[in-house]
Length: 86
Image 1 (spheres, one colour):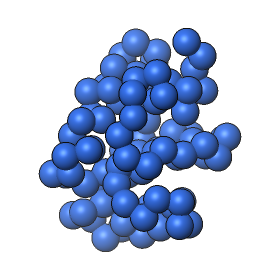
Image 2: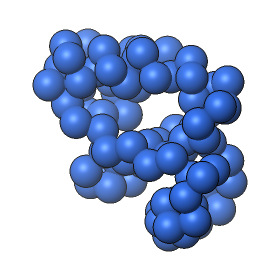
Image 3: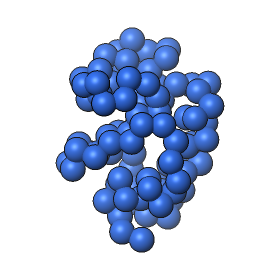
C-alpha cells in the first residue's frame, strides 16, 4: 500500500501533487492520500506510520517495502519508492 500524508497549503506538498497524479496516470499506481493539517484523524494515522521517520509533510510510505520519503523528490525517486523501475 502506498500512502501520502500532506498538508493542504504546504508548498512541498503542492509541488508533489502533479508527480503523484502522473504516477497514477502513467503507471496505474494508486497512492492513498491523507490531508493531516485539517484532519485530526489523518494526523493520528500519520503518527502510526511515521514513528519518527519524518515528523512533517509530505510524508510518503510504502507499507510493503518500508521505504519512505520525507519532503519533495523527483519523479524518478517517487517511482523507485513505489517499486517501479525506470
